[in-house]
Length: 116
Image (cartoon, rainbow, N blue to C red; front, side, top):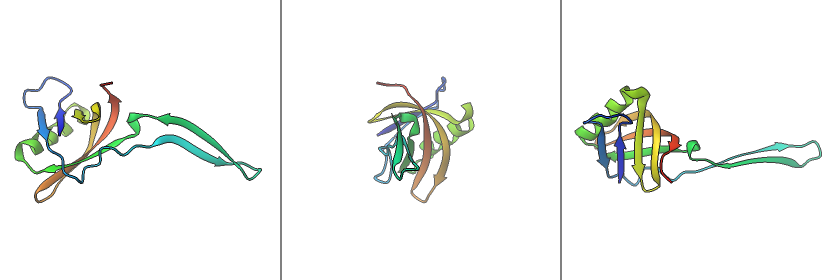
């Protein structure tokens, strides 16, 4: 279950979805890099994991009301939205939205984790 809400007061700016199995909410990566050294070895920089490196890809069953909320949030407040799901509550920027026949998908870029 995913809740999406406006970051500012908006009586029509919230909706709860049941995501499909195609949603990608748990992809994670570390801020790590590897550089070759002249002696044939490598130098590693590992700055760890941060939530802001995550992108949420959400696919939900098409619903006129839910689609309207997401599209309105993309056009207001610089595309910002608050998204809550099993992993926490996040401030995000909605990057894109695509409508299919019986589902629609949207991608959200995490800007901050609001929960612990």
